[in-house]
Length: 224
Image (cartoon, rainbow, N blue to C red; front, side, top):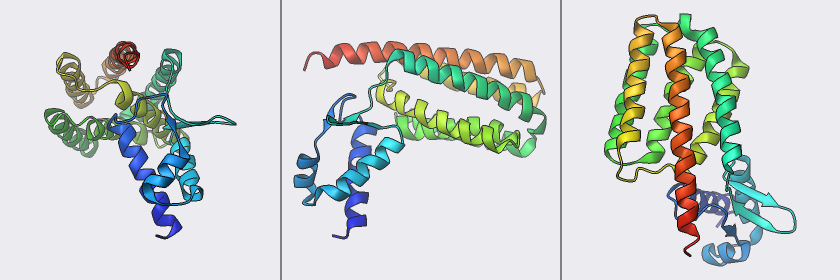
């Protein structure tokens, strides 16, 4: 096996395990165990872990090792505060540039979100959700805003995948879809202020659900 292939294999192996909740937040990644599993040296494994760290999925602590990210509630709150600021700026700068093509894209993404929700597939759901919000940011034409938005969306997606699973109580997920539908209607009607207010409310709902899911998940992990 070439080094690049081993790195890629380990990267996807760990990332998929994290996103599919096969490894709990806070768990340590032991290089020796991974090396034995994939029959490789530690060098490509360290490279794969560094890539996961750059994506916010893993924390590497000097002299201790690599651990699956375990965000605190305060970190989640800070992430959502930053996202609110970016989303408000995106609407302020980009709303007037949203035209029929953008609305068509938003509707298509919403349909794909509904399909992912129906299949209980949280990762594709979050990916389409991010694309939905990026359309508004891209309409601003501000490259810095777009890049910061991508970064914060990626980080929040990690939190949502780790703690906010589709778990049988569909009320929150259905509300999420309804809020996206309403956003599109407001955009079509040119109601900028209503889009902004609904978006901020939407983010508050997401954060509240995420906070509760984190508490529930932590209480479950203490059983093991």
